[in-house]
Image (cartoon, rainbow, N blue to C red; front, side):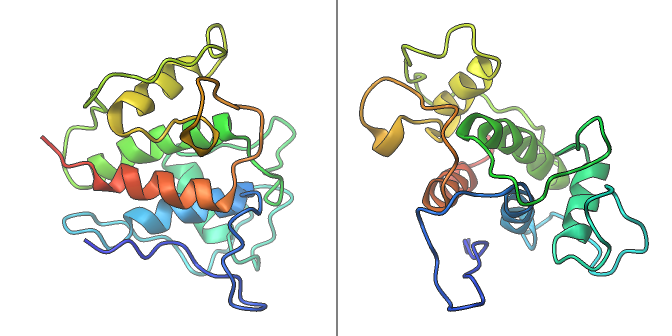
Length: 180
């Protein structure tokens, strides 16, 4: 199975591993990671005629993907009708979308979207009572995508921005899990 879902930046053909992932990049990463997978029928429009959010012009590179992700309930906008496409996502926000996208990807293949534990969950000392604690624990046990920074220590840095290298590594881990 190929893992070609991370694009380089067109300006200079670089990856930029330490650059924060934006909301529109997150949508693109998760959708591209599932697109073209055997038995999955995932296509999103390249041209759109409506603005899914007031701050997302129809001509923007990500609009078709964001529209698709919104319609499939993978992501949502803000109460004021905006999406904030260039706003960086935190590691917790990233993990939250990743869990939804994983379930969507399995469903698209006709497989029950049950992200059951494959190994013991990592114990983080600082996630109790945090809004994403259950998702962090679930994805830690499912495929180790929720991990401490550089996988060292026992603290999950949920409010730090998700970086390009973190996004690529976690998506690869997630996609490597075999269905039961």
